[in-house]
Amino acid sequence: MIQKHKWLWTVLFMLAAGANAQRLPADKKATKSTIALYKNLYRLPARGYLVGHQDALAYGVHWKYKAGNSDVKAVTGDYPALYGWELGDLEKGAPVNLDSVPFAAMKKYIREGYERGGAITISWHGNNPLTGKSAWDTTSGTVAAILPGGSKHALFVQQLDTVAGFLKSLKGKKGEAIPLIFRPFHELTGSWFWWGAKSCTAAELIMLFRFEVDYLRNTKGLHNLLICYNTANDFQTQEQFLERYPGDDYVDIVSFDGYQYGAPSNSVAFAEKLSAQLSVVEAVAKEKQKIAAIGELGYNLIPDVQWFTKTVSAAVKKHHFAYLLYWRNAGFKPKDNAMEYYIPYKGHAAAPDFIQYYRQPETLFEKEAAALKLYR
Ligand code: BMA
Image 1 (cartoon, rainbow, N blue to C red):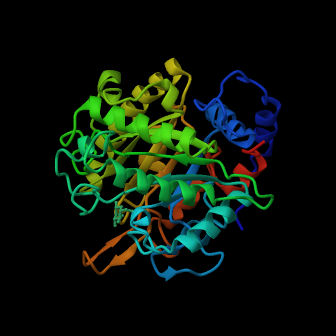
Image 2: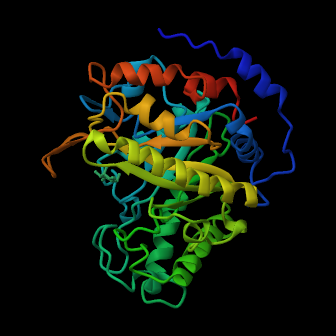
């Protein structure tokens, strides 16, 4: 078992409780624990950042659906502090999501991570409501078609009802709504989803974003959501980052996704870009009194064995953001005849480096997140 001696930091962090007390989520009716999560994430950068993993409890590179398992835990002895889950295909009424995770199991995993003190974030690669094809079907006109007055608006509302029903069913032991970081229309500056920048205008996307948040909040009465605005890593300036921003009343967290590709020799340039983009998002967060974060991060197969300490840590070290989420350890994907993973499994060449990364004072995994009592 790896020990981390960070208790002093935890005490200092808890003493700081109450600071920034005036900062509240955009939803004026947010539940007490959602407000607490917001405030805790807001002041978290003074202490460090939550390390998250997508689908962490459902499967890893060499296993599937084994109670208590997680690739992060197998390597570090600790769970991630943040769990990412994905709703794609829920809107069709499917029992499993687009990556085959059963929604019934997902519900249990979400509750499990929350009860241990971890944070939960949700994405939705919803299928194209206009064509019925996947989220990656970029047919233009889709967003216009699902806005009020559009030919597929009723269908989209039906889909939102299904999503809202699932989100509403996520409850803790005492029946309380589990606070969720919801990331609508993620990577919205990119060009690969039907809500992407080449498939709709900024005005259309902003209208859709507002419609969805208003609908979930006001019509469906969901007050356990922190809304995460999330771009791709294709911006250099605040203006570019904010081009499709729906407004301060609709957003709690500002974030972007960044992946490294190609050879390890790209690591230096990747770190520079990550750091520069964090500076932009941090400045936006500061100005708007929002929370900065990295919505998704990763280097598939981790071919650079010191990627976590030498690239990620070097890039994020001086920055102030609340969390980052490594993408899923899918393992072998028969459909693509390829491997996909972003966290080293036990025995992987990058595992020792990930342990070093785990030991850094600013990386917060679940034990430390639990000690910070994010929901109080
Ligand atoms: C992608 C890949 C896909 C997956 C999708 C949604 O980046 O991991 O295999 O289907 O995310 O989770």
